[in-house]
Amino acid sequence: LRSGSANALAPILEIVSALAVDLRSEFYPSPFEPLVRTLAELLDPADTDALELTFQTLCYLFKYLLRPLLVDLTRPFRLLAPMLGHAKQHVRRFAADSFGYLLRKCPADALDSVLGHMLDAAADAADAAAVARASDVALGKRGTASAPATVALVDGVGL
Image (cartoon, helix red, strand yellow):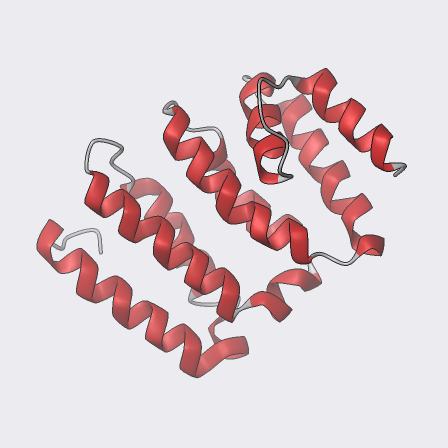
């Protein structure tokens, strides 16, 4: 992926998605984690086609690898953190929407630890407001957001 041309990205990501479908649980965590890190490093917000392909592939991977990913959602969150804290709002939004799928599928008893981890990451981040906005979008909350809004959202859920 790193040395490939822009024209090779689409077929490579299609093959990755097909492998994830075929291998399912064998695809996670070994090939999945380095792949997501590489995709995060290669994100080019100016290339809309590549951006769309990247997040489309992430969504397919989340769908096909749902069960192993739900075991510990803090791992995929850490992998997506560079995208959730990206300088461009539309990249943060795509990443939050992608991760939101996993959050919506997360069992209620595990949601507390995931949200706690997300809030800890927001507190540790240099730009805590950006991470809070991304997590609010991932949870389906629209509009402006800040770290207090995220805390209020968690308190409102009763966690």
